[in-house]
Image (tube, rainbow, N blue to C red; front, side):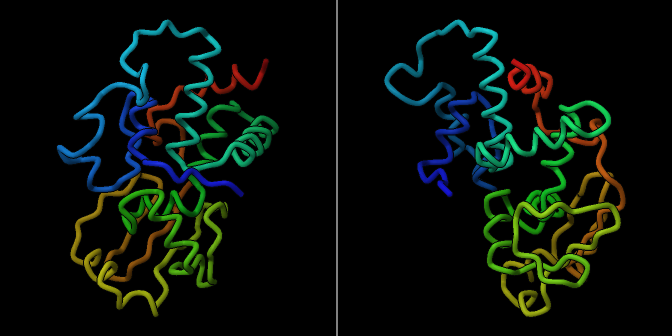
Length: 206
């Protein structure tokens, strides 16, 4: 499966806002949005009037890039969300939030979703005591996500034990044990990702 390999900061500039793809760099003065707040490329600073379709497309692209999901994965998630009870847009965001790589990021065990995805792929985590190395794995209410015992001796995870981590209301974290729990499925008001999901629904409803 193809994976974006160009500079991550270009993605933030293209969407016109921080996507927090580079961890600590995104909070510093080195952030590309702070230095060059316009789209990359020769015509990046040109003023363009966006059509309705353009707005919908940009919102879909932004959501994909926030969560590090490829086009086919994203469309499959939407199709599943549309067949569930409730609003398709909200169901989509909940599905994205409960991916294992995002849960690891939200628990503070990684500085970015990209790093979380890499750590999961390398087998540093368990879910309910069983090895979990698939970033797209769906985490459910009651599941416990923990750093593997063999991985806890690494410098990175030792540093996390000394940190004060704030997590969303739908999960808890114990930094001493390096584990977190999904206490409930997130609701729309619990998700702070700046995405207008109704535009994505409109795009796929055409």
